[in-house]
Image 1 (tube, rainbow, N blue to C red):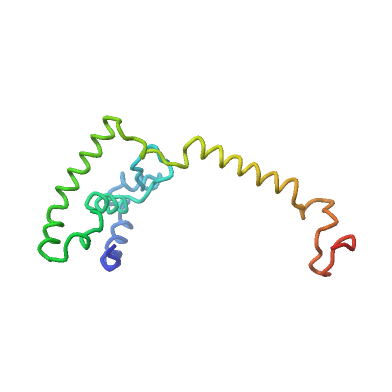
Image 2 (image 1 turned 60 degrees about the vertical axis):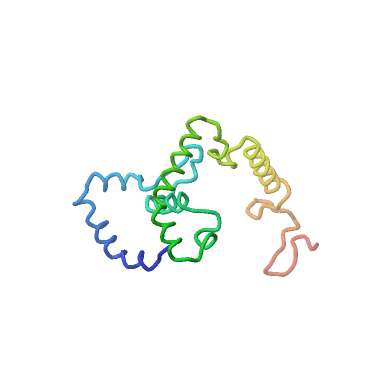
Length: 163
């Protein structure tokens, strides 16, 4: 990530966004309604990210290779060719992914594992166990008649004289 360029562009971005209600009122209304993020996969409702981050991550994902540029060459010419042809490789990969998803042969990665039936059941049983522990096993310090084993921190003792 090029943080220096992001920092340099911040005043320009801020100026554009503060004038958005005048320069592009329709987009301004759209943003005010909360439509300022993108969801790439419909099967995962928890994966909404900012539009600029989506663009950056999509380009990075489509152009990556195992090991990155460092993994295949240290020569400047090879690295230059890698980046000059990155858009063609990215387009080919995108078409391949879309073809695979359209044909339905590999949609298992499109659903988030936290949305599986077994995971939902496991989470529900965990929440039930915690609620049971809080309601039945632990002392409620706000109850009208708390347990005699509630520790009195001020006196360094215990209600009822027991520890």
